Image (cartoon, rainbow over all chains, first blue to last red; front, side, top):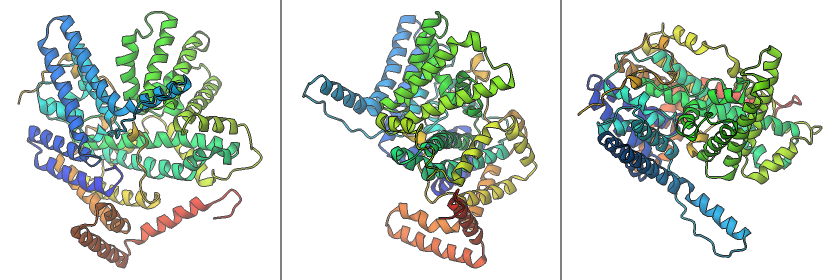
Amino acid sequence: MLFPTLDFLLFFLVVAAAMALLDRRFTAKKAMLVGASYFFYAQWDWRFCFLLATSTAISYAAGLLLGRTRRERSRRLVLAAGVSLHLFILGVFKYLDFLTLSANRLAHLLGLEHELPFVEILLPVGISFFTFHGISYVTDVYRRDVAVCRAPLDMALYMSFFPQLIAGPIVRAAYFLPQLARPSDQPIPIAGALLLILGGMVKKVIVANYLATGLVDPVFAAPDNYGGPDLLLATYGYAVQIYCDFSGYTDIAIAIAALCGFRFPRNFNQPYRAARLREFWQRWHISLSTWLRDYLYKPLGGSRHGRLNTYRNLMITMLLGGIWHGAAWKFVMWGALHGGGLAVERMCQPWLGQRPASPLGRAVSWFVVFHFVCFAWIFFRAEDFTVAGIFIAGLGAGWSAGVQQAQPAMVALIAIGMAGQFLPPGSFERAGRALQQVPYWGLGAATGIALAAINALGPEGIAPFIYFRF
Amino acid sequence: MRQSTLTRRERAPLVTDAIPPALRRRGGTQRQVFAACLAGTLMVALFASRDTPGWTEHLGDAPLVHRLRDALAAWDEAMERTGLARPHAILRAAMQRVLDWQWSGDAD
């Protein structure tokens, strides 16, 4: 059940009706939301609901044990067991066949004939996200950053809440669990939420989907059939597509959570306007980058133990961040590029400074960072290293042949996607304030008409969100 | 059901809220959310009727689905008669023209 579908609209209408009925009964509302979330998840494969429940039980039990245990050594053991169990589930369902394939290739290179059998497990949608939720909860309880959650219903809702279940944002326990302790006394920001839904729908249904079908997919499928201009514009196209696809999903998720009465953190902040790679990671998939910083980079030592250790920690963090995206070496390469880029940027910091001093310096720095990010996206999007190699080699050739695929509509979509990166800060807030004057039923009706228009403007059928695979 | 006790750090926001606090000062209740959703769904039913019969294709082949498909097709015909299906057709045709533009000036 994808967000931009009639199925989801009807599903949410039922959920909204139930929330209206249960408005003053907070526990019943939470129980209903858990039921709705499991129903939502079961639309992909009902068997994986047991996996989600297991992951929830592990987190809940580990939290209770950590709450009861006083000895530091025992607490460390509980933490290790909780995190290991989460990682074991993730490893089996996401990485087992990848490890088997890699071991078989290595054996082949070494001249060994025996091959390990593949298990061929179907990847459960959203497993990377709810695993990270579980790990962050157990770790935060161990660090005493969050109180032990003694209410199983709260833990179940934290792990399964349907807006963030499939592709995030990764919501920390310390941010979400307090919202479950008592009903919010703040009004529901209907205008802001509906604006986010419309923005997310435009990004996904129009910009991302047309760029995918009209430019990116055909060019990445056979890069040797295209010249340099098409390849370059397909690279820009993919940068805009993945941003619009993922941030569009996140916008809708944030809005749906808001309409349910809950707050979600910001996950994107115009990432392609970054003038430093570090700044890019402060703006792109913020919930993942801060998760990696707090649960991986800092425990590794962060920047506390000298330059070489800092570079090593950056590299390890980004390599693991890369493999988190998918069980393939191309994602490791993408992570390695970003890890290496961050290390080099830190190395050059004494000469470059924290941020560019002049407008020209900022423009040059932006150009370099944006193209570095685009270059790394080639590995992320390409089917494998061979295709990525053909693609990169082709970027320097065939410039006299003109364009085949990157026709005006595609270039316009890239321009629109990039223009959104440079909107003045506060634009969303200003638009939301203006809409607050409209009565709620008028807002709903206007949103319905706008959704019908977006549906008419978009291609037929909705491609799955890119981050569903992760 | 027992509820978790909050630590000081929990109460403090760790990250920026996606919807700014200024937009949270005015808003609605869950009932108003439902009313807004209902109004929106009604508008989708009126103006996006063209896509609803196709939507039933993934629901399977049960007799109930056949009846639903027939009902949605009848609804779409009614919307066409009233002229409410026209904006959908106009927008789709306009988008197709935009997509067909070529650098050479020709359309596909």
